[in-house]
Length: 292
Image (cartoon, rainbow, N blue to C red):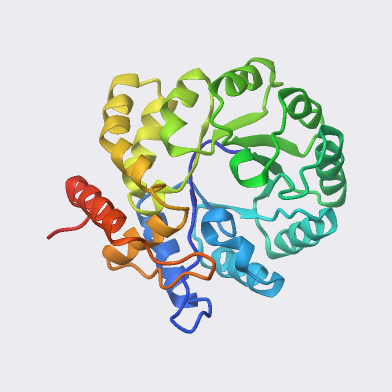
């Protein structure tokens, strides 16, 4: 279904809080000009938790209508299964290439509940589905045994793994059936995960430096470990400092510093603290992304 570098794209807002449609198109163009393989609208980085259903669908439509070559893998998850089905069907109707579906958050379902949630979505929507495991956000982990059961469902084609548990990642990679794709959900772990067999990343950092993250991933896919490692360590401060405060606060702030359309946040997200802003600014200066 997918390998390479996908950008979990931000949702730019105007000062009045509305979606900045032209700004979003500009960001999509920037990503494609830098060679990114896929764009993921309406993920956590896109502030999906604050979007109405109407806005969610609108953002996906803007991206689908504007892309030229990149695949579109739409965020379409929810903590209510019926809502996830609704968003997934809406995304399919818009012509996306696949969906990224976060495991139910806040509810803290059992492993059986997680399985039945995804099973229901997969049966309702004839689209490639990438499940998304991020326990720090959801409050529950998709265990390896559950991933393997889900991998038996034909249109569940992969997992975005952001548990931070490298042993769990190794076990998934060791047991996954042929064709089931593992993607890094954490920029800082992309290098080690891909050396073990993961096929790419859904990246936050590629909002800021798409060509550099894409280059690292391409070198990893080609088995060019030394050049990939050089890029990994060059990007490591950015990987870390984009999470110095809650995502997507630092990445949207970075884009603003670069003169890109990012706009405001929706509460409860807010502006960075001055001390963290200076750390982020220095990181961007060191990378040559901005100038003094």
